[in-house]
Length: 211
Ligand code: TMP
Image 1 (tube, helix red, strand yellow):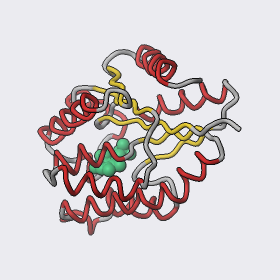
Image 2 (cartoon, rainbow, N blue to C red):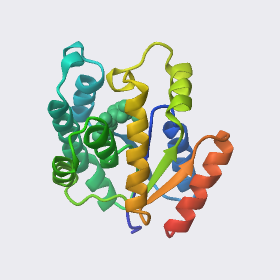
Image 3 (spheres, rainbow, N blue to C red):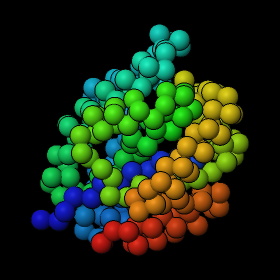
């Protein structure tokens, strides 16, 4: 049986994760690999409910940063146990739209909760599920937010309605994560055309993984 492969995509709003994830899944399927596309927060019925609270519930409008990080971690714990680990054990390729680096960047840095709680919660929720490769799609927040607003119109969610400085902090945090863990996290410039970006993603995948 093939060995499971765990790939995560990270980046700010509007960086183009979803369309590249679909393209990468097709690439792996073309190689005869079974793929599971999933996302965070979400990926299981319970984690999708938590996503709804985090992003859309009107009761979440005054959510405290501590509540926020605990809900992201709760959604992740369920996702890892119910979906990610079983799929990897079956030799599948799991591609997740976001994982624990988002918690480090959004809650740890942009929400200023600091590295200690975040590190502990990330490892508690992920329980040893470590991405084999993380693609960080890097784009200036200004451009990303403009792309996201063209895509979503006025329908931005709670995490998508922060001030520009918040997303600048998120971007800086992601780049720092990549600097600290260059073996796992590959930075891909997402400012060019979709095709150019996808080519860079495939190069990163082929360079890092035995596919
Ligand atoms: P999405 O819009 O890319 O689906 O992601 C949902 C939002 O949740 C996005 O603004 C990033 C945010 N987020 C966090 O703040 N912390 C996390 O741990 C995760 C997974 C997402």
